[in-house]
Image 1 (spheres, rainbow, N blue to C red):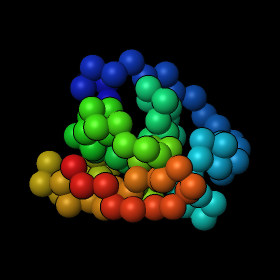
Image 2 (cartoon, one colour):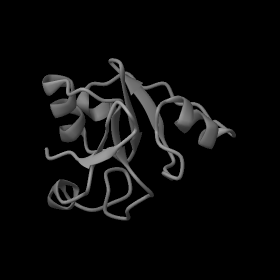
Image 3 (cartoon, rainbow, N blue to C red):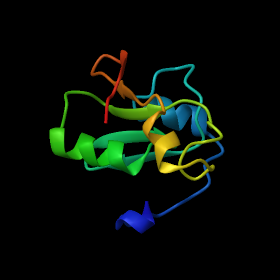
Image 4 (spheres, helix red, strand yellow):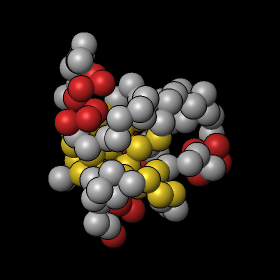
Length: 102
């Protein structure tokens, strides 16, 4: 995210599961990162392009999530093409999940 011009402040969170729920990520969704960006939650290895689209389109919802730690996701490996094929989910206002095309 820094390479895309974002200011990032990282900290360890031993209570990440509770933090994710507090940020509106539905229970049972496992991920290793969570951030608040301009009023939205972004959880997991979400491609910067998806975040950019989220911030431009501003859909009704909590934010975006990529569950787990896909080996080909940004920060883990893979290529730009791999990142485009990741299933990024929009967390709706009621916690429902739907695919977010970017």
